[in-house]
Length: 201
Image (cartoon, rainbow, N blue to C red; front, side):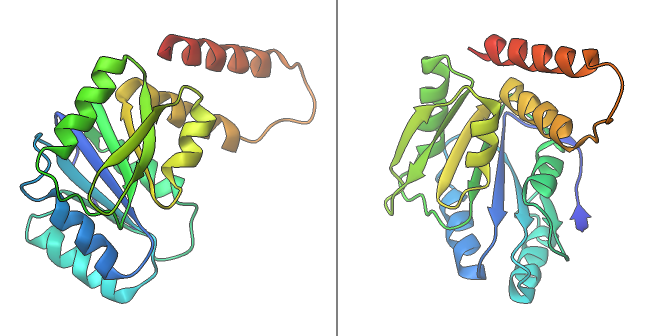
């Protein structure tokens, strides 16, 4: 992977997963400029394997129009570079979406964040239509949340605590398990995950 990441802080972090042609990421980024209505940082994770997309995104990064850029030069599970980008910006809230949606209505991001805060849930997931209108619903389970984060057409607006829970869940699922020995560590890990999910409610 080629990474251009600067650790920083922001009120809100937008992480965009790009898997297609440059036109899709261009439409999404143009919808962010001057329309979001809330201060934010932008990270883009490019797993498209498309050289035109790589060139376009590097140009935007060099111009300062995106803050962080991760380009996967070989096939990789999208969650790996996505979590790398998400960990770069310390923000109380993060919006994760696949490239493609265009948000034409001013203040759309501020309205989504208001919906998350007033609902009191750890994360909202949904889709955006062509006009930028979103349909959102709450999600509590970290497994379901991680699945939705990499799904085309999905939006995930999550608290920092919800993303931490996903990161812990992902690390646990990739750790090798020993064939023999006591199972107390596995039991403790499952209990910790259960308590973390309950704390998000």
